[in-house]
Length: 343
Image 1 (tube, rainbow, N blue to C red):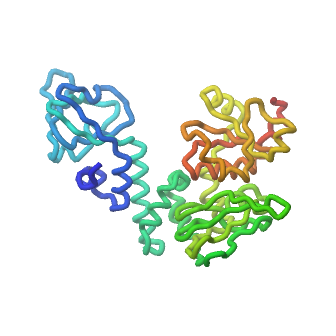
Image 2: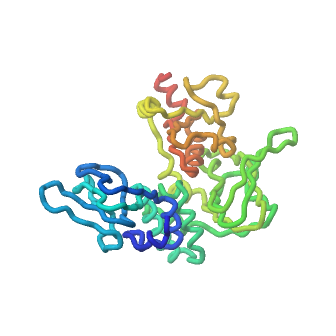
Image 3: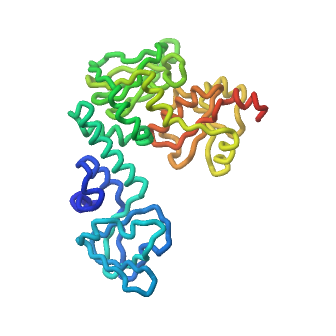
């Protein structure tokens, strides 16, 4: 999609260059032949349509003359028949080209860009691209706007050299980290002197949340692959400003309803714990392997995560949310189910 064309549209005209690049990736191009209907009056679809070439008729279907909209006009800068349910039917009068956006995607894009513009002014405004990329992360897109200013104000910049150990397996959970520049390797000791690489993380990605959410010692070591800059957030601020808005919990009844509609149960306990007994139909994916195995999961599916108490599954849900998955936590875990006598 042509960025210059998108830059003429409302509200895209007020977006930053970084956001326009994202908009071009989100837009779908539609071609209509004369007489083709784009949408009907009364429909409540979830798309916004912009006319880029050609002419359409907006018909209110009340015997009045239809409104004609030509590409390049002031009217065409706005979404066609924006109100939902639609107050007009839209029919192509000539060959037409349109740009289509998901209403939700468009709203998130504008909200993130406006939040970034504000935060760049208020918080070390030297790198708007980094902050925009950060807010484009699915995890941060779910943070309430009221939390964003406080959240960014609590981050502390830390320079790190190649080979420097940032977190060590077995250490305490004290900070959550985001990579501003450089890259890191996440490894875990497998016993007998063996080390397993779990992930290599790049700018915009985060680490260190597992210990903060579960309250357990660090379950992996994180080492800088090359020199860079990290942004770290103290545990208390991570908990109140970031974790709580993003970890969504469901009770047994809600979980059962989601499963009826295709949700998958995932037990994030260790394999030995899983083998002793788990919920029927569940799959075992231990928390420490989640970074390594996340890409094998279906992004179109909802996942209900559980462990014994809910602590490890909350950390797992945060990890998956960062990667754009729809992840829920079974509230209270297996311990809560045992107390209620559920099976």
